[in-house]
Image (tube, rainbow, N blue to C red; front, side, top):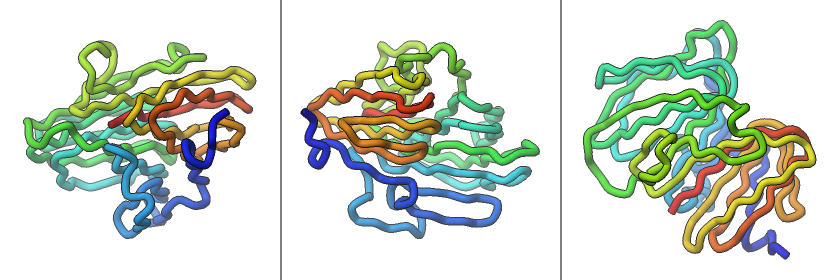
Length: 238
């Protein structure tokens, strides 16, 4: 029997940090910008998980980063990327882009679509500082992850189909029909964070609705049961 108090922490969507800039309506699972909560600074190497709604024909103008792995999971609409390395690309719903900031990079992320784009922006601390910055994007058809977790981004060489990141972490995605269940083993000393992008799920007798967060401590195997058809994103990190 899972002790939900010690091994699973629920972060309801309504409890997340909130910033409404007009063009950007953002929720923060961890302390970010003007939102500060000493109990939500990070979860292991997971430093940021932002739930962003970006208005049509708007976005983030060029700005710098360094020494961070930045993963963008697009839920609806699309995001168009441009950076100081000369990369550009459009990432649509269900697909993923990653950027290793390394020694430093400037990038812009724009919603050039006629609809609001929604996405998860996830930052993971790298296993080491420095290195040349890089960027990549890849489609991940939802049908390919029906009823199972698929690795979307990974810092482990054996995950050859995933986008590479420079962290001892994996970003996983799954779609689960109501009544179906998945399991995930969180290793000793590791940290997992899970958010249902859509639907509703249950873990250890606790319900998580769409956009709620679940912080999972290491040393346990959790069963994730879909109460409704659900799209799940999970990060497993140091």
